[in-house]
Length: 399
Image 1: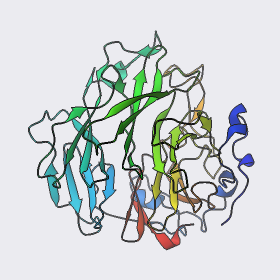
Image 2: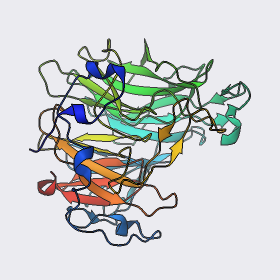
Image 3: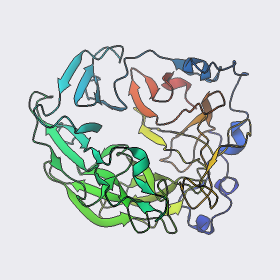
């Protein structure tokens, strides 16, 4: 596996000395990742955004929503609005449409699905917001959230009979705080503890913080842990810690690893070795990333697969920037790259200590075309990337 030292990847922050893993070979190799010159991307055809020669192929699966889970028997479970659906033919179709918690207010919208340690289907909802107009969430004068902003809390329901019956949805997040971006994933630890991360719109000053929701009874009840992750010197409607991804590592300590989207030019991290009760101090990773969410998945062969948007694309174009003191929209205190036209993928065989040379998955046309909010799912010996682009790659062609 081709790796390089992490020192070349994250140069600036004083906290770099606290980096908890090394040898992540990324940006210096991106320019050579494509094995053939890309075809001219057609803005209307995302399939043409795929970089030729890197093993990715377009797919026409019947995508429903952006949350997927592979069941033990190989079926694929997905969700959209207020129903779940199951595919038995490799995601070509999702014919089994199952209403979730029928009779409950339709205003609740499914944002994440999972399966508990005992096999129950778990559905996470988000409540509607007041005000409903996005531009009214933030007050440009006070640099804070509109005090009238309510709603957005997370609710959970579960089914032990594959959707025939559902428990009444119960609020599990802090009722006093609204949720920003919905959770990226649900983790079931090796001890069958369920962990879910809530991204709170936290006022005074307005920013995003991350709370840990935990269940030790297979999702019947949930506890909000006292620990709340908060990035110092954050103020803005897209500032702080955003859209974290969790994964259980296969190490002697059964570590839970969280990667956070930030506006500081890198993904940040924290780890827990006691099923989420305590966590290591926040620190930056060597993963140089724009202000965009990553996605991580454990493959059936044991490797980790990670996709993200780097700070700069491999063509070294100046990325679109948001935030900073001159940004009237008040995204964040820091001026941050929002490069989302290029998506890359790397794999790790040693639980994230080192990573393969990354592949460029796709490169969108200029003029605000984006490849972001990717969901990863493995199906029939292929890794599927769904969201801003719909593609798959055979596991044996991954780096």
